Image (cartoon, rainbow, N blue to C red; front, side, top):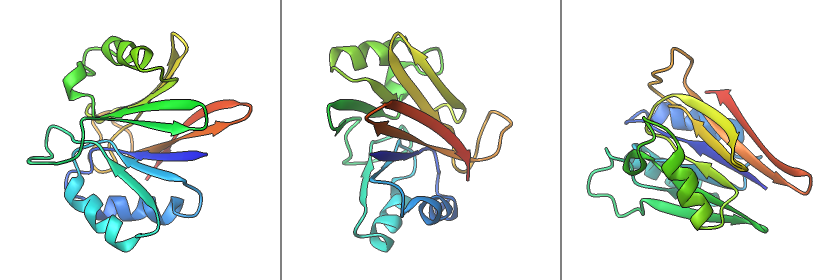
Length: 159
């Protein structure tokens, strides 16, 4: 199973369109990790048959989306959140603790606009960076996590 993750589009529907054009045939679940709900709604209209999810970011004003969603991929649980409520600009300790408390093997988060992937204390961490306005001197990006019988694989790619 492949979960395509994107974050921090901040009004750039063109960035989301490019991600969906590249991944619509390969992804099983698409999750926007916050700060882009309005343009994600346009993708929902354009791709009505895709499983598209959203967690609220600090700039998704008046959002009805949850702050956290746990996605099940077989026996693997994946925690999805924007990250602003968990101090991600200062570290991932709070997210790892939340993941452990919920039995999750992976965490997808955004907010920092910087790419990040690692394996920490047995938990896969993936921040796909910003798909429109990165702050890490890299190109705009998105990511995915593959859940396979052989294990978990994370990846980040340019938009």
